[in-house]
Image (cartoon, rainbow over all chains, first blue to last red; front, top):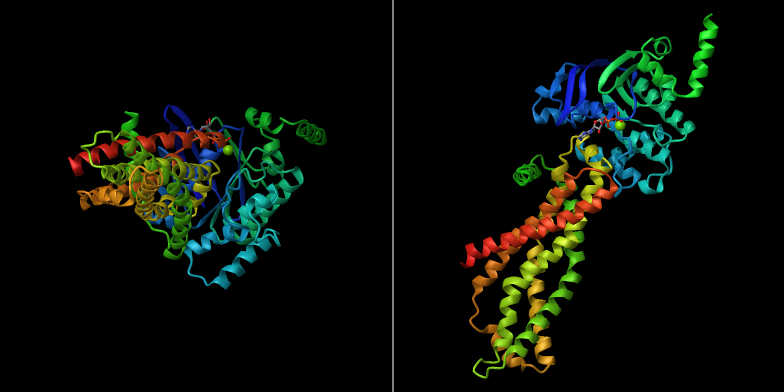
Length: 255
Length: 245
Ligand SMILES: Nc1ncnc2c1ncn2[C@@H]1O[C@H](COP(=O)(O)OP(=O)(O)O)[C@@H](O)[C@H]1O
Ligand SMILES: [Mg+2]
């Protein structure tokens, strides 16, 4: 379990994260949602240790990040996988090179073991026959698949995804969402996903944390989110006509 | 104040480059790639510029030699001194600050804005060691490039002097050997090594710590070129005072 307690982050004068506390559980896809600029990316980078918060603690299964030595921190990071918003693939390397990169850096495996592992994860994300292509030659959805493959190749205990389906068409977006959820359940990992997309919430939101202006305004499940009275949440959820209709039907059904 | 803090974060960066090294087989291939990119790919322009600079210095010396009391061998002496002391080490380094420096800033800067550096860090890779260390090692070969620049500069001088009928080959070579002080070569290579380190690290700093998007990568390259040149010029002054003064 990841336990976040009272997390604060300032950039100079700007108070970006204002005391966030929450937990993320194993085998579940937890969603951090909120408008653009609400602090989701900063929050996730704090979880990963890429940004150091001024106040608060993050506890990874009993290990408090800020109390670890820099070697211990790097070891903990090797248990984390991250899918960046723009995929962040190394554009000087092929698909295979990207996915094999962590294995090359941190394992003593033989070439054939590494290739087997790479082919296994690329298969898992349904990407075949692309091993020798460069990122620039792939579609957005394929790049996301490579990014996911690279993130899980080391068997992480923690998986972080920053807006994994931004820039994808709705169909591909749902496929990617479901892929992440399947992987989370299959390998029993702790998965945190940033999103501002209500479709994702409905597909895979087993736990939802709603951020507003850097504060946690609400948390619950996707079943709860339609029943809440929290005004900021309802405004976010029903920002699209489609969901307004869904809400209407839901209310009619109950009366 | 901002300059002081920039110098501070530059020093911290340099220290970080030498920590937690990348595995040797991987590092080896990175170094070879950088030698190719930074050194071999620059040789053409270095040869080209040196030949012409050497030629021009010779022609100008010859044209200004009207006093018959001054020996014609000065036509070989002048390009030797200026090429070895300044043109090969300093002028070439300014060119390299533009060519190699902007490549370094833009390649590292692009990795910064596309979050590839964050991706390295998340995996537990020391991104500074991974990106900057191979460039520093590759630039250790830079003195060889400067040696070529010296040779080409003098050759260019000889070609312009002899083929342009300003002097005979024998006079030119006599001038080349006149009062030769081997320490000047040492001085020149000490400067070169220092400049090599500057050319590898200052543009890296500008790329690594850049903020913004794709457009800002271009701006960062320009700023990086200005600062790399300024640092080279200032260090050139200080080192000349220390080593020759
Ligand atoms: N490195 C930084 N320096 C200063 N401000 C930042 C930095 N990163 C993010 N911010 C600010 O933090 C706020 C939250 O940003 P972000 O977490 O990226 O939002 P989201 O991911 O929810 O769209 C924004 O107002 C942004 O300008
Ligand atoms: Mg974001």
